[in-house]
Length: 335
Image (tube, rainbow, N blue to C red; front, side, top):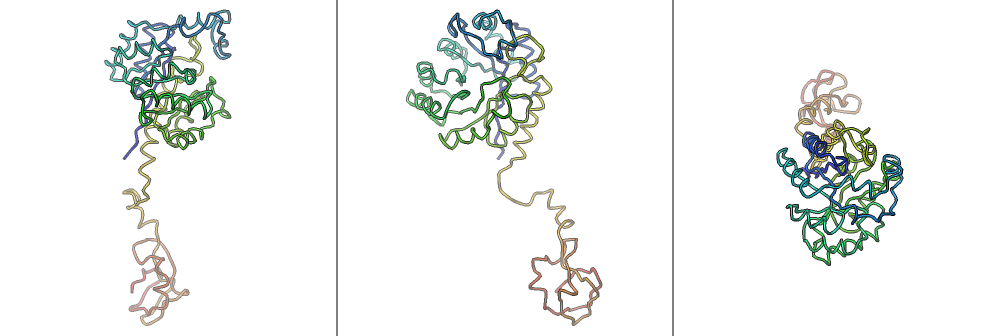
């Protein structure tokens, strides 16, 4: 049975506060074949203090004189905007998803019908927030950028104690750097989390390109999250580290191919191999003319294609037997 990977196309704040751009992002995600398009739900005043600085990557991609709060305020989505985006997702047959960055935002998403919740890396140590989400008893995706195994264990314990079963939890390996250098990906950490906590795992990818996300699926990721944009040259904090439409589509296609290629793990003869087996395998044949009554030996028997006769694995049973008929050179041996 093929394990289907949940692919989340992360629009994030790449809508730049423009609803037309947001709708186009939904269209791109739907056309690429993603399962969900994900936005971010927050209130800038609740999220950051007025003195909070931007990350280095944000400073490089936005106005350096603008505070983090000012930047985020331009990127907020109102409740009415959420409803419009949800409706557009429904019209394009793709799931709407959003990360709530504070308790009020989580409650807004709940009121709008969202039935699973994403905990972003920055909130993994936010105890009251974790408890609030845990009490919802909904499927939870927990992102682990900047976290140690101890941080992750503590967050899982809070969620469980609040009411979310571990079986309802998927933990995403993530590196909070945009874009993530290959040397900092450490993709095997995803498998370490699976072994340590017995949870489903996935990967939130901030690398350039699509190869690491594809590799994550081959290593067992059940969820892939990847930022995308219409154009990496657009203004805004996350565009530079996002896929463009053709790349997003290529990633989805590659992941679906990998799902098929992984198979069920049972080593068996495939239909394609069955027709090639007689051509590629060998049989025991006469390496020279053999007269009736002669003994088969290493001097007059060898192994050659096709594989339609006696298998060379039967060599010991054939050598020493007496030929029951004349054989021409290259003729299949029969007993």
